[in-house]
Length: 354
Image 1: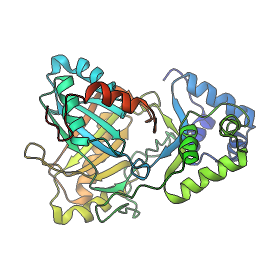
Image 2: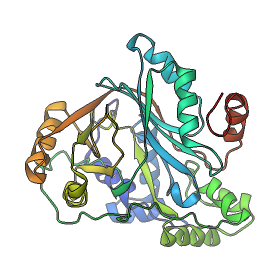
Image 3: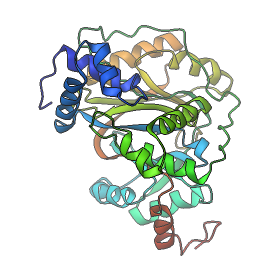
Image 4: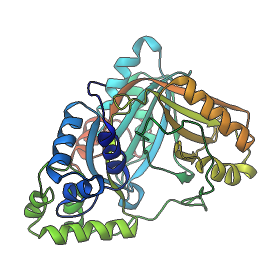
């Protein structure tokens, strides 16, 4: 980190990741919780952004409820061409995360596609363009937990304490249905997904663009939240700059009959930010994925070992990110999707045949 964080900075970072207020003067409300002025909150957030600790503050939407298709993708690439392959993948507007990881499957990215796009064909086209050996789409079959919250209080013990709050978010294996959206809803989503202004009334400019009052825009955001369309309004941090340098993806070989029980147990641990069931392949036998962010590899290994003992699964491996190629929020309803399709999918039929 380029900035030394004091106790108030750390409390502020914890708050903005989980309890950012949807209100006309959100920074003032955060100040009340911290015992400081709204002006000081703004000053501290500006500094935290300038130091690349806070990445952005914006709405985080449920991609599936917007009608988009999503998937994690594992790709094998010749290590000598990994950086170049990543550049090709990054050009797709639906790619939000792209990492090199310590495994034979060494390039991992997440992709979101509009309803009319073809997921498998797009993944195969990206593999071809990037020169990958093989690409495995790994869409979510069951979602047990999602939501990164990096604990910034260094005095809290890194020991893993199990909490009995695991749950399956869509237990029948079916993703949430897309929510019907009006043209105004789409326009509001495009505004709410932009990085929040660092002004006393940060929603004012977006409300003006939409020709509504701040109150009306905030009420709409609350309705989006109630419907599940908006998962949360929050800050996202630069993990490494915030001190969390070990990004460990634990992948577990779990029998289908056990996946529900094991998934709920694994998702109940506070240090697990994401927990999913994903498909398996002959060359990829791991069906349960858990993400853990720690300050050191040793700490991460210890946490995942504790999870293994608690959930009773010993057949697992941990993939660490060795390089971050891309981490952004998807710009939903952007014309960039159509442009990419037009430029790159013309040689593919809708069945993926060239």
